[in-house]
Image (cartoon, rainbow, N blue to C red; front, side, top):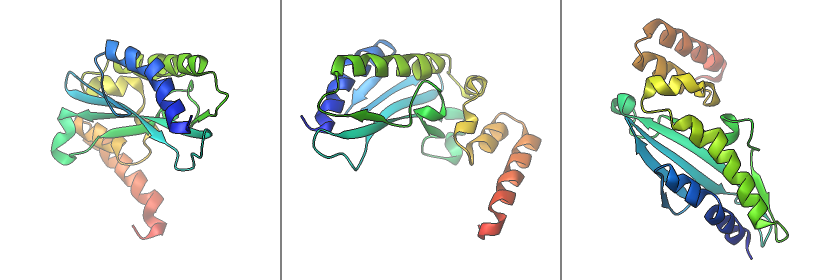
Length: 171
């Protein structure tokens, strides 16, 4: 089996059923759902270094908020899942000897407990703030979130902090 086939087997045995139970629809290696005023996605990114049966993949989560749609047509928040849960490694390694069922159970537990369960309570931007995930996306999102939640002074302070960080880069 090639690495992508091993990864697909792990996904089929784990995430497909779990995420379907939580209202996610599968399209390729991307799972998405609409919940309240949000669009939520969980997706798999294969490593470009996968060769033969050996390889790796990472998992990502993104949330788009209706409240923020006017200023950004793309996902407002996105992060690799290790940025939002300590349960996840930066990437998942696969090889010909990997026990697919055990790998599927591990991935399922990480995504269910570390990503889906928290997202089940997010139907709007104010709900998302309670997760305290905003810092997983280091630039842009936190000030935009503060602005859309009506905290203009906080948004201005966060933007000033970002500007001072980039000041020596000519940006």
